Image (tube, rainbow over the protein chains, first blue to last red):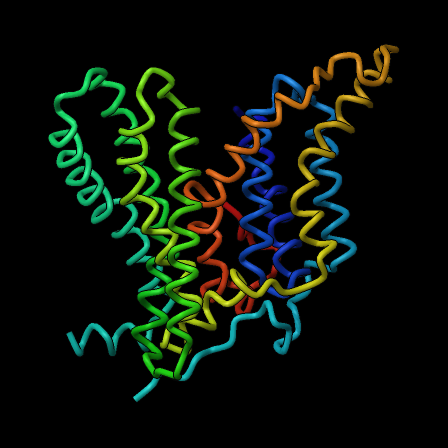
Length: 88
Length: 242
């Protein structure tokens, strides 16, 4: 359980990466989420390992560096929220 | 009412979080329990009442996690209610297709989770109303309200390269598989020694996958990302997933 909680920040970084890379697609993140949860029912076939957790952290760190995630996305990027002018 | 709408317009993010909390933990619990009571009463003649109540509670949970996306839709619609002509045919067709699909998914999901001894008919009856929620969200991507259409457009018009959708689907299975292979390599075992894979084992993950997609963390939770993400005001490293 503690390992899982510790992994959450890295999982959310991967979510952010998928979201940004797909220019703000809800569908891609929804598929990502469903794929993640469906692994619980695959545990009999593919049991989770400590090495798998390390790999997940490594992928998240790679995503940070490849996508330069410490920088803000440019304001014209489709994944970036634009302030809506209220009607009326 | 006008004051609330004006406040909503000037504080959309605060309104979104407040509404999401209220919908998730308040209104939807009430609605879910009311629905559960009605259905339990309607199905009172059946055996396995406790199993049935468990299933209705699962459905209440499914309703609750729709709080974020419904809150986003309400705020979006309230701030920018301007309408543009849209295709009613597409809207109703999407509604129907998603409703039927979500109903099948819900029935199979409930059967898998805890209802092997409950007949199919009660499960279908329970699934009919709950499947209306994803149908409503998906069909709103063709709403007359232009901002709502924009808010949910990526659900029906996928953006970005398809490779990223494959990555989204395969990242976790690949991480699990690689983890097992490396562990076996380090222990000097055959690479796939503890992988017990056969085609039949795929049905449970597939049902879970579709069930999560529609009901517990897919469309409903990730829907909040579309507009009310924090990317504009903070680092993209800020957690966005759930």
